[in-house]
Amino acid sequence: MQGELETILDALIDCRFYDDQTGQVVFTDMQKLVTIRNLVDSLTAAGAGHLDRLGLAQRHGHKPIALLIEMGYAPAVAARMQRIGTSAVVERTLKHAADGAISGEHMDAIVRGINEIGLHAGEPPTVETWAEFEGDLLAQVLSGAKPAEVIARAHQLGDHHSSDTEGGRPAKEDRNLNALDIGRTDDGRVAVSGSLDVVVGEKLATAIEKLSAPVPQPGGSKDPREAPRRRADALEMVLDMAAGSGDRSVTALPSTLINLSVPADTPGKSALAFGGSITHSTLLETSCDGVVVMTIVDGERVPLDMGRSEPPQFEWTPEIAGRRVLLGGCQHVQDASVVYA
Image (cartoon, rainbow, N blue to C red; front, top):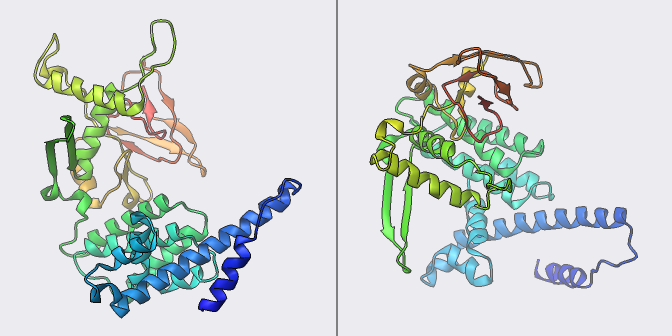
């Protein structure tokens, strides 16, 4: 392969875009470059897996990913290629990638999605089940889904599999894994980091969102604060209210009623506005005392009729964009699928 790669490399080095080329020519060339890039991703992942099996890095006291980084790959790219190359359950994906049809990011999304399903399954999936999962995720990619959408689909598949197996519960719904750390940075600032289950995270996102909306300036200009700054200010307001500071007491804490979307025909596809898909057991836990708002949508998920959870004097403007039946008391969440009061 070495001589062939050198020939290809020399040819690519001599390639140029010229000012007199038409848009169609440039577009066609770009499509070919995307295919070449995908092929390089596929071959690189295969090479990373081959190096891992040969144990080259281990013999020199290094981790396999460190060897890729020394070659010049960014750490994130090296980790991606290592994951793909060492995965044993994505044979169909690798075959499709071998002709340049799938990018490295999409291959990695399938690998990460399958790993996530298997990591938190109560019982190890069978070979046939692995093949079904891979086929489902591969179909998502070939239909044009983005990597994030592939991961979201994998979470949904994992939720269903965990619900169907004994002892299975996705990590995103396991409160025993919740953690919150508060530390100091080198410049003396306070760093907050944590990992929360999907329900607690939904409550946090809802509480922060209600207080982090842009506030127009007195002259009518836009709020100069970026979204991260507004969320930080909202967190301070939540802390002040919890402590009963100022003229607001803890009873004035922002509502953390969460928005849960439950398709009437397929409740197994229930999802939180921020946290995404959930299992059936978490659906039952979160909806036991919820307020049901029935929504009728057409085949394109456009709302045709919206129920009410407030008195008629409130004006409701439905913006659903993919949601079906809303369950919960959300008054305002940033997601475009929510009903605003």
